[in-house]
Length: 253
Image 1 (cartoon, helix red, strand yellow):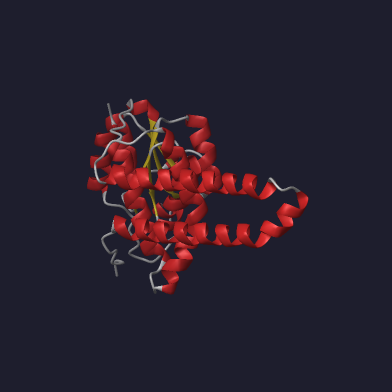
Image 2 (cartoon, helix red, strand yellow):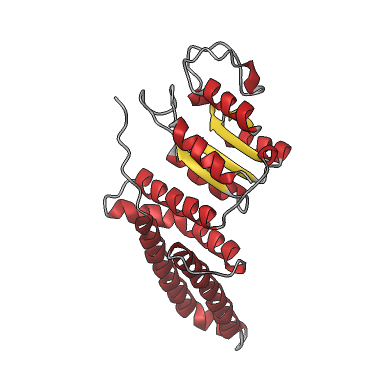
């Protein structure tokens, strides 16, 4: 049976990140307040210096996350805050997942919301690249489990039997001239990105892999397309090819 995937809502991820940031700020203040006497014994100026540094980090994180919210609402934001925002998200994401669990929100739902936020931010940047600078990246679970041909080293070893979507992805590659790679995990994915040096990536994967992959390759623009798992995770996965081609065409110059 096909897994039902709930429509992702961007506000879920943003809400959890904002709550996480508030808790992190509170924890930082309590830590600073408790350590104040000890720091003052070392130097009278040390508590103020540490306090200013913490305040600077907090303000940068607030500005970064705030810029994401404004960008999602359609307002222009300064590029200088994007890196800060991404650093804050990477730092706060594990806490957001834990807070979500307290409210019985499963991890995949939070990850889908994050992917939706990331996709919209990339679309708003209107990234356009040449076909030879675009990489379609997908995990090897998209290959049919009975296939004897190794395609992670060379995807063109595919015999296009039609049992899985690999032949469809190769057809898109031939039609538009984009790169296609099938990888066994994050290490090989990073190696492929390093070798091909794409200017943008269309990544097909599950929630967990897309979330980690998008964060790993930042600031490289990535649009994530969730795979479908009719036989459960990591086995004979598939993808909506119409969605893949539409996303691909939006990327091409």
